[in-house]
Image 1: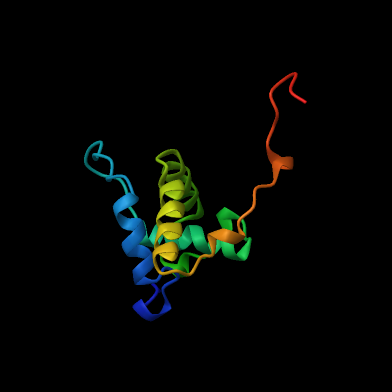
Image 2: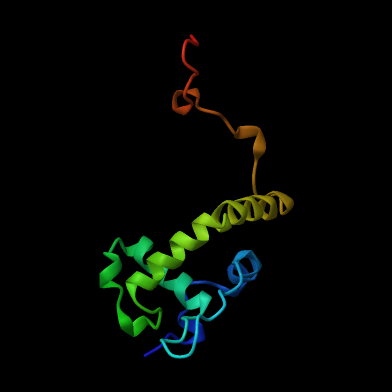
Length: 120
């Protein structure tokens, strides 16, 4: 049973931010094969696995998100296309524009930054 609109993991506003960032569907390689899972459904599968911590192969089919392999492959494709980095920037910009972020309290932790060889 597929999720109804009320049960969506991805709210409409978040989907409005993400959808333009997702690369276009690849051209079909020929007739036959399974139809491609909708991008929003695949995103919901990705979020379900990341939120629950279940294994990719244990993604419940009842959610209507396709298989765990599909969700994992889409996550990998979108990472390579830079979707997550651009989404992160968009969310930060939107929160900043709404004055919901206080940039005066930001800090940089130099412990996680590698120094070049020979630097002290």
